[in-house]
Length: 348
Image (cartoon, rainbow, N blue to C red):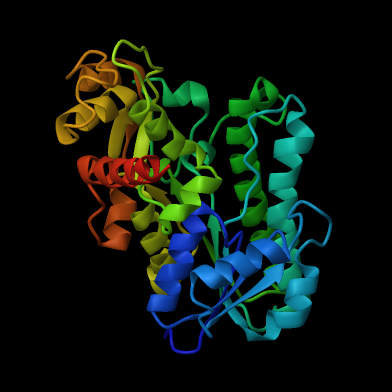
């Protein structure tokens, strides 16, 4: 698929991952139609991209509302060849797991696919859905050192069991939204011509595309690093662990997912390696002299031992083979993320 004049629709275009994707698409010569929740947000995004003539925006107020994407696709569907569905609800401050996480995630995915079927069945050829490692493994499996996550894995939680708490419900929402997409394609084969691929990243770290985005808050994975950058020398920290990937690689994978025909119908599990918070602290103390002695140290060098006991194994050799590019290293990813955080902190 050539980028020249090909139009790509990006849902949730104002988000952390999506901004990188929009930037990569524009640099590669694609035309981009993004969706955001309000005219104000959309105008802000257009301004950040210097009102690039190849970028336009549509308002989709609530992705979980019935027929949420109908208006955008009725208006623009005939121009769109590729859809990247990146928008998804992230909400950990809730006890109404069904209404705040599970149903919105599934509805959002189904409503964009329905809108394509209604208004762009003849034009859309590729759909890429941003899923998560959470669709590949349940939280209990993620902390099981005998469990291997790969592209074929599925989170074992049921609709009922994933309502145990907000984290489990969020993970479940990713599984059920992704399942809904695969089921939709199977059930509507005669009415559509697009193939789908899914992107299943681990914890997504890396710099924001625009440094000033940090003033409006931070994505939940990068918040782990922000907290450690602001930790106290004598402080304790929760040792998060799991697979990680740099946002710049996640973005690159979105383009590969529709550009490379071999990625059609595939799940791409994005993971460079496993990490734990102790590993982050070690890099921060090693690479930033201005933080040494001021932030937590934990037990330096104990990360690998901790991961061997408390974390699953990951095998994404098939994804790496399909994508064919090298992912950012952990150190590079953490240094770039923390440098940007410190830059904003110093300006404050």
